[in-house]
Amino acid sequence: MSPCLCRTEVVPSPIPLLAIRSLGKRAWVRIRLSHVNWPKIIFGAVGVGFAGWLAFVLVRFNIKRLRIIRVAATATDQQLEEIYRLVEAIGSERPNGFVLARLNRVAGDFSCIVAIPQQMRRFPWAGKSVAVQVDTDVRFRLVDDHERKADFLGREYRLVALPRIRSKIGKIRNLFVPTTYARKNEVLREKLASICPEYPTELLSYLLCVGQETFGFEPMRQGRIGTTPEWVQDPEFQYCDQCNKRMALIVQLPGRLLHKKAFQEGTFYFFGCKTHPDRTRTVAQFT
Ligand SMILES: [Zn+2]
Image (tube, rainbow, N blue to C red; front, side, top):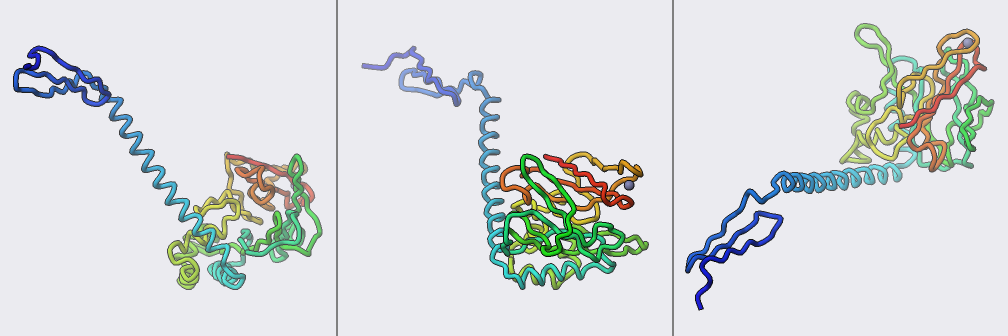
């Protein structure tokens, strides 16, 4: 029996809708473009493509991150010490500040305390320590503990003197950026590459940025002693209630150093007045 000559079958489909029409022995497929929701299809395809690309980037980023963390964790005391000495050697002027750097050493307890180096000039708190007590709130106080250098949550850190240089026009400034250190010192580059050949400068960023578990350099996640604060939000400089002068930064500590769960996205700033060193204030900012 011959097929019906006038019957049209429309195949429902979200993709190009096909209309099949049989006419005698001839048949053709007609694409009914007017029935296709092209914007939806294009938008969906772009979305799927973007999600795939994002997943790829995230996986690659995480592999790199874990690799750097693993390499840093296996570095010896001697290797880290050599790196930090090379960083300090970049400076041509007497340092006026320090950053906390990672060590693979365990501290005696879980207290949070950092000693302010004696050699900091015109810094009234030099020789004292800043102890941080974390309960329901976070309290900073100055103490006379000279035993420990920098302990946070059971780990020891090293204070690395910030390289301070004089520019061609005679201006003195601190260098904070690890990539600048690597660029300025070939021996440092070689030393880093001998530990982590794939990502030498990223390793240095990770070592000098103790408030995050990744390799991108975020100055607001650094632990700093002296120098200038790197604000998470808008600046909140503090002023002495006795002389009304702007206070100096004593320490900047990322929240990760102070508690294993809370304050992960925060940074704490402890200020004091150089004229009235017992007047202090604490500021916390969160992303
Ligand atoms: Zn004052």
